[in-house]
Length: 594
Image (cartoon, helix red, strand yellow):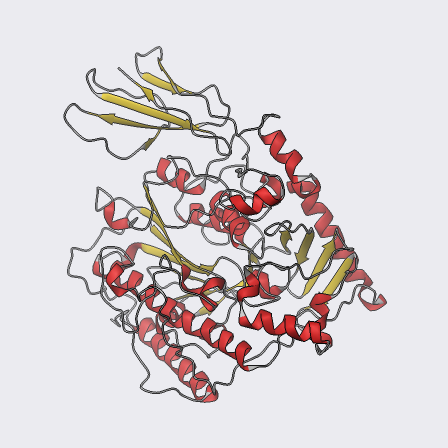
C-alpha cells in the first residue's frame, strides 16, 4: 500500500507541466487504490477492530479557498492531500456560514447559524481591546438551553474527543465539551485502544497573518518533516522566532492574480507565500495520516478536511463573495467508497455536525439547523446555502447572502456603509498596502476600485459561473428578475426559520444575555441529591447547564472530567467534584461531595 510519507518533485515544473504531473499523479494513485482496497495498511501495532463505530478525524486548516490541485489549481504541490482526495470524495460547492473564523467555527461546533445564537459578531470572547473600543466586555453567545456542542454529544455516546487546539467558538467551552483540548490533545491519549474517537486538529500555518509575520505559536514545519510524533507539533521542528520558511513557489511562477488585486511584486510575493504555506500545511496533513496508519486506525477512520472559510487576501476574508466563503472539502472513508469522486451538491458548514453524527450512528438532536449529506436516511439535497457578516473588529456592517448552484444574492442592510472597512490587522499585508496606495493616488482600475465605493446597493445578484469574481451586479437587470425574486424569497424563508439577531444592537443583546446585569452571570453550582433508588443525582438551578464531575478513590489523582448524563453510584470515601456551565455564562464554583 502506498505510504503517506510525502514524496517530492526534484525541480519546479512549469505550470502546465505541473498541472499534467498533478493530474497524472492523482490518476495513478486512484488506480492503485482501486486495485488494493482490501489491502491492510502497514502498521507496527495491532490492527484496531473495525466492527464498532467509526473514528472521525477532522483536519481544519485556515483561510484558504479551493486553491489546491484536486480542485483545479496546480500552483502548490500537495501530495498528501492529493492522496487523500484520490481515496475520498471532493465537495467543490462547500461554503462557510461567514467569511471569518469565529462565527464559522461556532457553526461547526454547534450545527447552528451564528445569527441564530448571537455568535455572529467577530470574536466575542478574546478581543478585549477591540470590544472596549465599542463599550463592550468579552462575552459568549448564549446558546438555547437544549443545545449541546457536538463534541459533548460524541462523548455521551462513548467517544473520546480531542481538540488540538483552537477554541475560537464564540464562547468558553464547558468541561463537558472535550476529553482533551490544547496543543497536546490527541486520540492517542484515550484510555482504551478500542474506544472510538472524534479528534479535531487545527492547522494554523495558512492563516492570514502568516502572509506577513511569524508567531511563535504558529508552529511551522521545516521542509521534509515526516516523523510520526506523539503530538502533531514538536518544538524542535519549529523555525526560530522571526525566521520564515523559504518561499517554495518560484518568482516566475504563472500565478493567477484576481482582477481586484494589483499585479505587482509585493502582491505576487503575498500570493507565493499563501501557496508556500499550503505546501507546509500539506506536510502536516501527512503527519496526521501517517500517525493513523502507524496506529492501525486508518481502516476505521473517516477523515474530513476543510478550511474554516475562504482565502486570506484582500477582498476575500470577511466578505460574502465566494472568495471569502467557498472552501476546499474532502471526505475519505476507510473502505475507499466513492474514491476519487466529485459530489457537486451544495454543502454548508451547518451540515458538518449532523453529517458526522449521522455517520457515527448517533441520533440527530432537534436543535441542529443543518442537514446530513452522508450516512443513512439522507434528506433531499440542498437548494441553497446561506451566510452572514456583521461586526468585524470594531466596524459594523450587516450583509446576508443566499446562493444556489450558480447565482449569489446579497442583501445589504447598511447600504450607506462602504464595502471596504479599515482593519489594522489586514493592513499589515503588502498586497493590501498596494491597494491603499493606488486608491490614494487615484490609479485603481474599475475592478480594483469597486471595493472602495462609499456606498453599496441594497441588493446584489451575481452569476458566479459567468462572473466568478462577483464584479457585475445583475440585480437591476430585468432578465434576472425571476432569479432575484427566487433568492430574495429563499433568504426571507431562511431568516424567518432560524431568526436573525443581527437586527438587535450588540450591546442590547449582551445585556439581554446577562439578564440586564453589568457582568456575565455565573452558572448555578451543582447540587448533589439522591433519587428514589438511592443513586446520586447532580442538578443545577441554571436552565441549560452542562455538568461535569470527577470521582476519585482515596490516594489517587483526579482523572478527566466526565459528562454527567444521569444518576450514578460512588463509594463513600471517594472524592466527588462537580461543576456546572451554561454556555454563555461563567462556570460555577466547584461542589464537593461526601
